[in-house]
Image (tube, rainbow, N blue to C red; front, side):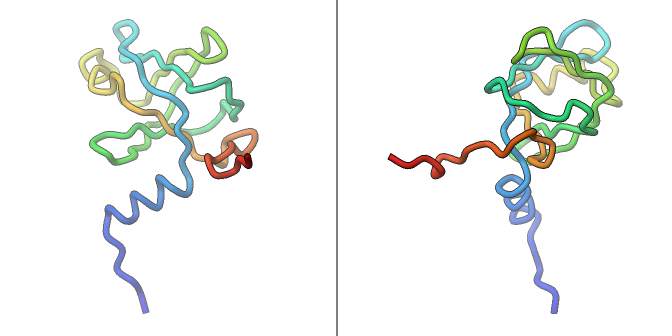
Length: 116
């Protein structure tokens, strides 16, 4: 028998189980829809990943990467597919940026992983 799962429960399962908070989108960069981003830490991940997730209205939305380049270990620029204008990219300003955990080079520590 199938169990009905609400959209909110499914989103929570995605957030808790498969996504890691990578950083945030800062602001629009240039005129072609590119955005700057900052990572929370110098964490290693597969830079050939197909998409990153941006939390829009509390929902993780996948954005497919056209190009990603770094200016430092923790900052860089992203160009997402289908975002071609500054106006379209501006709605992403300040939003959290997530990565699927399977693309991380190593499993990050959870808060309860530390012993005192």
